[in-house]
Length: 404
Image (tube, rainbow, N blue to C red; front, top):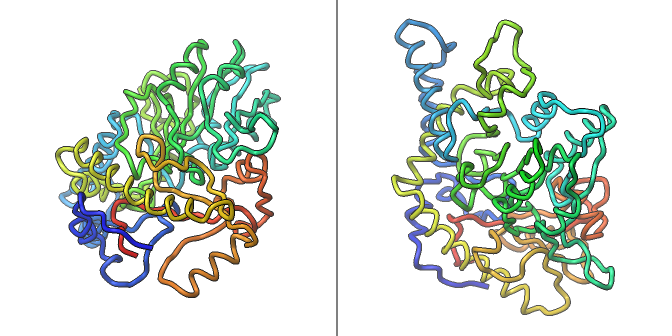
């Protein structure tokens, strides 16, 4: 299987990633974490070697440390068109969602609408909150079934199915921008508009699988809270949560009692969970994207469309023996190159092991922490272990080539 993808300078892109030039491994597991930019690596090393002190000091190195951290926060916010006071960095989106769930205020009788197409990071925190507070959970599976009641291999979070769940008691809707199994892009802007027809209702979006592939503008999307992971966007192993500034006064601070308003999202939720050296490296990701992000992301989307067309075309050529989950069309307006499938007569884990034993491809099988999607929506029976059952997933990004 192979093709040439020549409208995007993929070799120039690959030159920024040391791992791609040191091994013959073909990285097809990028949804689990991308390779890291050499400039980010250099930044982390330089920070630790030259400015590794506690921030806030008035001596020379202390000032440099503080300045580099602040520059990282500004760059991280700029990346999604937010203010530095509207973001918080932490160890993982799972942790940040847990923190957020502890800071929001709910009333008896409030309802939470939770997507079953999501990674558990944007589910478990809300389920456990509902259990503690006696809140009502409504499950949103979108177009989860076909007319004959059989599982739909391409479920989508559509606005119409959401509207059927909304009520005057809706307090929060949690959903994914793009499933980390299906790769389907959901219309978050329209979803936000629907959610906000209910006074006081909040929209919490997991964009971990979307952000490595498209430009993000939280103002245009109209979201309330929005999470992503920098280590899947070619950067350091750290996550980020956006929270709309106007909502800060409504949140309960998790910080120390001597922290006073006006709060930033970091002071509300951060719990010192960010890393100085990792935060300081984030400007290197923006530098890589360049001064014209819209143009760069458009080129990336076009390149990735061609990559996913190769994979999807190959899988479709096998007919009924292969079941593809998510959009089968390669259009970049519909999906990102996170492609999951199963092959008739093969357990997903066995297939992965066989292919990897005879090739340079690196990819995985399982439920990828979207277990409710795999078990309840696709009805594939993922088992209790991450590697059991589920799907085969190959996930590409712009530094992948069409020559395999």
